[in-house]
Image 1 (cartoon, protein in one colour):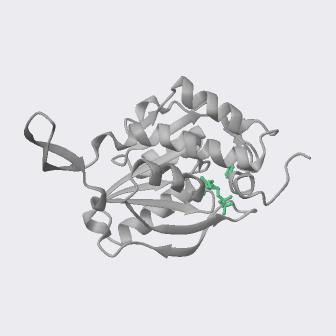
Image 2 (cartoon, helix red, strand yellow; image 1 turned 60 degrees about the vertical axis):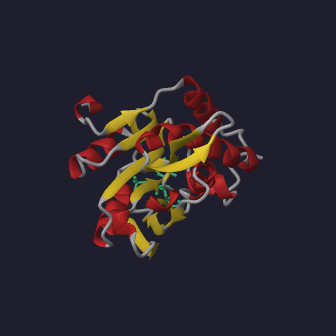
Length: 220
Ligand code: PRP
Ligand code: URA
């Protein structure tokens, strides 16, 4: 039976033609590493623009050529971007482009090839994470295990306000994530059909970490 994700109010599928166009290029196995990395960055900027809509701001006094005025600027120190290693690193550049002064944390997880369960190997976060708006980034939401574990780690370190941004999601991962964390906004660039027997997203884009870093050559 197919999964209807419309009941998960925290799941936001962006469905924007510019995002979809670039994701189509990402999916294409003929897209080579350099181009792939650039596209991940560009998609992240487009998605980030939407996901950062509620960024914290504060007012500063400035002078326009016409008169003095008080205007809002982004409170970049109140932000923390957290890529899930490895593939999330591909999105980190895009987020840094949007908010250059933001802080970064890193979570290291990989999926066990047989069980598909996430295995943790690294976690380094800013000390005052509890005071920051945290944006967890990972291109792929497949079973949801990695994202769910990462949020658990963030919460264990005191993070209070968390948003998750991914590029491609499977309905199975959206269901698992939203049922575990109904209050955490989940931004999705494209919602795909399903997982296959190896827990890869279909049609997906293959192994995102390998394609980002050229670990495995997909096509000569
Ligand atoms: C990929 C991806 C996610 C995870 C998603 O990472 O970047 O972290 O799989 O799958 P899940 O939703 O079923 O947990 P992977 O485990 O391949 O590690 P890598 O980025 O280091 O290659
Ligand atoms: N991780 C990936 O990189 N791709 C998938 O399709 C699923 C998990």
